[in-house]
Length: 93
Image 1 (cartoon, helix red, strand yellow):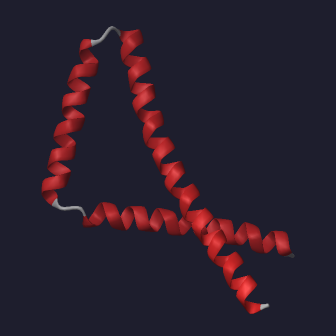
Image 2 (cartoon, helix red, strand yellow):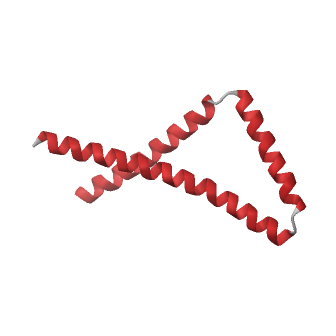
Image 3 (tube, helix red, strand yellow):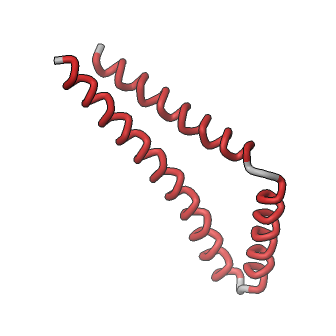
């Protein structure tokens, strides 16, 4: 029973993290989106100048950095929520 609740809580947290991320993305202004797209285009242009093996290495590295940042944000959110739940449990006693 307790494990089921924890699994459900983890699932809810993951959904909430993605909701917040999507909301944040939708609230960014058009100028930000244009600047971001320009940066991506410039990075792509530079990557295309590299030999294929180096381009693949750099492309993978850049992609992994985005994944790492997303996972770190999720980790900190979960840790903060766990601390809040622990504090509430302590205060109820």
